[in-house]
Image 1 (cartoon, rainbow, N blue to C red):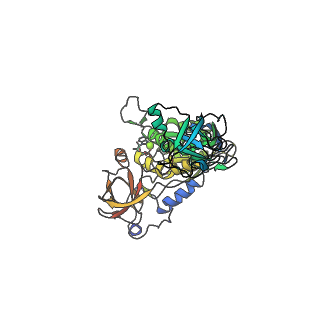
Image 2: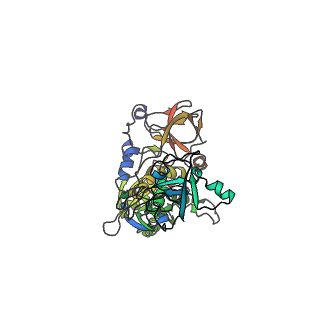
Image 3: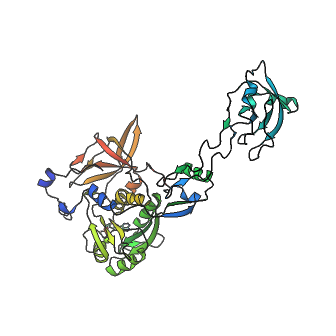
Length: 446
Ligand code: AMP
Ligand code: MG
């Protein structure tokens, strides 16, 4: 990531006017927070999986070929296998006539060699008989004519000469025995699944998928499917976060809802044993019941809890003490659903990709034109939800309505996040803006 410019100027003269703002020193830049998070993640160990399950994962072993591919020289066309020298000078006007001594289909071995002066019918993919060095496709022979006239197929007229070797696919043309075909670390796409199958491999070792425990916190939360009593809201974060985990290749483990008391939170966190990452939501700001930070300090260590961004400033990161030396990283996402999703995008997704052994890249970003203003009240980097459209080769970013971090439908309408840097009070309509493209996947995804 590029180095971050510290915010200065008017924001320092005019101190934060939000009552809940923390002193500037507590807030990390997005880059610093990103570096600190990513320092805790590396590719997980390899695991054997059935071939098809490897799709979208990262190869955890070098693959050397146990065989040549193709295993034998074979025909690239339906036609006649012969010795190229026999048809030198053949043409429409003076065809070369050769006796047909047999036929070889794909999956068979030729029953005899092809000596000078004879031809053998051969199908695409069939092994080229010993002696033959060239295949003449049916189109260059009287094949169709003889068939329509009902003439026997024991002789063929060749209408064209061919370079020696034409339409013969040599043994090992694609892969030599012992060759390094795919290296550990390769992202497995459909093409790689096909290559692995072509080597006869039914299983392959891939970097295992991270198990990500997802825990919502809050006294106000109810689970979808149950009735909503007074003062409650449905828990959307558990599902939005778990869906995001699936989208980037992790395995979510839904731990439900912890109520806003230390006992319940401790109890629910006990179920995180064995996971590679714990993602909580809410309970990380400065309210009376924001206890994720407290628990993190009691059960492990806190690295940071505030990032200079909007939304998602109250974002905690630390480690839960695990068995032996295996501490489990914990990302405490903010409670507001948009903040949770944006924080996931910026920090959890790269962490999961790192565990999956992918080259960790941010989403692709484009430069575009903003069609509505983005305000920056307090010197944070603003990520505004926008709908991006391309017209006449130009990307236009239109804010998707009110930008409150509780308005989740604005995220659903967005396909991009437009950035107002921390040192600008606003980006105005008509100005150039950098846009993170949320629906452009640069990697293999499931
Ligand atoms: P908190 O960080 O606990 O102060 O929560 C901030 C806001 O996010 C509050 O309005 C919460 O009701 C809301 N919120 C917290 N958790 C969830 C959740 N799992 N689903 C939807 N909204 C939530
Ligand atoms: Mg709360």
